Amino acid sequence: MEEVDEFMKYRSPLVSRYASKEMAYNFSDRKKFTTWRKLWIYLAKAEKALGLPITDTQILEMESHEVDIDFAMAAEEERKLRHDVMAHVHTFAHCCPTAAPIIHLGATSCYVGDNTDLIMLRDGFDVLLPKLARVIDRLANFAEKYADLPTLGFTHYQPAQLTTVGKRACLWLQDLAMDMRNMQRARDDLRFRGVKGTTGTQASFLQLFQGDHDKVEELDRMVTEMAGFKKAYLVTGQTYSRKVDVDCLSSLASLGATVHKICTDIRLLANLKEIEEPFEKEQIGSSAMPYKRNPMRAERCCSLARHLVALLADPLQTASVQWLERTLDDSANRRISLPESFLTADIILSTLQNITEGLVVYPKVIERHIRHELPFMATENIIMAMVKAGGNRQDCHEKIRVLSQEAAAVVKQEGGDNDLLARVQRDSYFAPILGQLDSVLDPKTFIGRAPQQVARFMSEEVRPLLEPYKAKMDVKIELEL
Image (cartoon, rainbow, N blue to C red):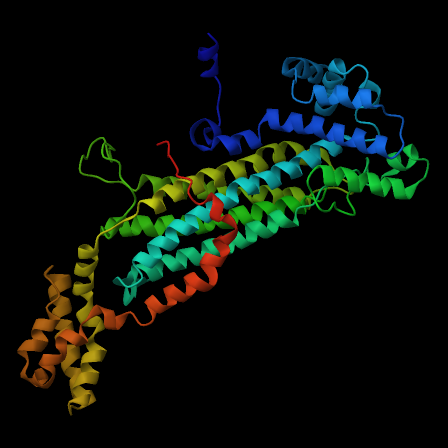
């Protein structure tokens, strides 16, 4: 019956279908409420060390019940009190009767609420950053492997000058590298709210320590250090500034935009049959069309990336409507927008790692597409070769223009292949350079410095960025489809 009931209510697909166990746990009730208890223990320890009448027995009692939370009791208390923090204070006090008088001493709800949120944000980044590093590593390997492989470049999704498969991947990598730097900075900029009291003035703690400002500052420092932060915000209202949430979620939304671009490119290339994402041996692309190989992983990334980008509107608007020292209309919104942003980014990176570990390239298809377009792109090279052989540029330009339009008509109106090269070879005007045509039309002469750009980009920007994550590079992703 319990299992049946479970399927009678909505479950977020971010957790039930997609996100990793570590990220789902990071925003779980278990993590949240055990962190609340840790924060109460940190506060009691620091207050005792600074001279308040708190005993070792009380602290040991709290520590012995740090993780054994009676969630049913807490829910019942919250139904009665309509206050989640006080519900958990009462639940903690019930199993710690000796410590009950000093639990939450001098604190406000945001002491546990906001500080826990900051810990979850920090820990969330610590889950995401190694995953992003692995995506960058896999894509960097791909870029180096195909640094020299010419491919049609596209502007406006129209054939343009050649690039290489590896150079194109570097465009994706450059955006991901920006995202990594932004996320690392947002993570490193996080501070602790610390011990600030009801409106951020620390008045309650100043009273507890009988006007001793130094002890209040030391209390703040000690608790901040116990929570694993180097600094606390020097000024807060009742809450830490909601601009902090904007900063964190901006870096994730920017990642979402990057991933959407990359995976859209992969989907376009899959349509051209030049590059494909991994496709399992027994995977079905379509229930009606057995031949299809849909880019479903890239499609999933695009779908979730749109949600990740859209979520940024929540913290932006929340930060803009915080009245004076705070208003509670941030609470319900943040319960959704903060976890969902990290959960969404988590599954996007896991999926993209799977894609980048198994990208399939079809060089013969790429070569065929180049062959169809290269004669048009080579017209300037042909003109230059003729001029060097003694020809007149204007005469040659007119000859090439007429032949190009004839060849274009064959391609567009008759559906035939590009026969410009054959037309040039048949025209006696071009006899002086016929022996040069193969070298003039060598695709590698059209890719400029693309391979050299790939090599320099890897050595100067990509590989150094990954250095701190070398120990976490070998993790493989088993993607649940």
